[in-house]
Image 1 (cartoon, rainbow, N blue to C red):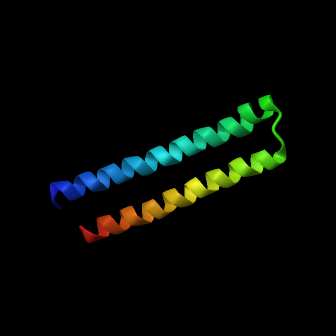
Image 2 (cartoon, rainbow, N blue to C red):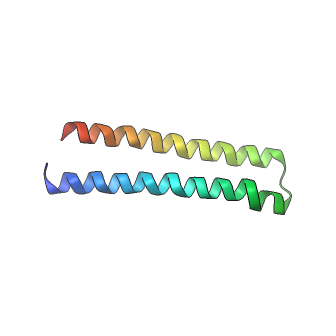
Image 3 (tube, helix red, strand yellow):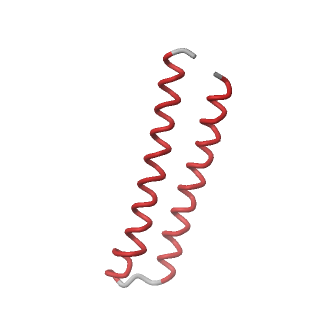
Amino acid sequence: MDKDKELAIARKGRHIGVVIAVTMLIWLGMNMFIGPALGLTTRHALLFDLAALAAFIYAGINIFQLWRMRQDS
């Protein structure tokens, strides 16, 4: 495997890891601390849940693409 391909795979893996970690931290923070402190309604909590779900779907698609990149090499 050439060096450019390895760097692309590593970069994509780091990107996926950051997306998952940041999404989880923001989601937990909004549902456990910030939301109740601001007195947000359950509709707002659902909005944050759907946004986190969208981010996890995005990460899942990228994981599949990463898997395909590794299969090609």
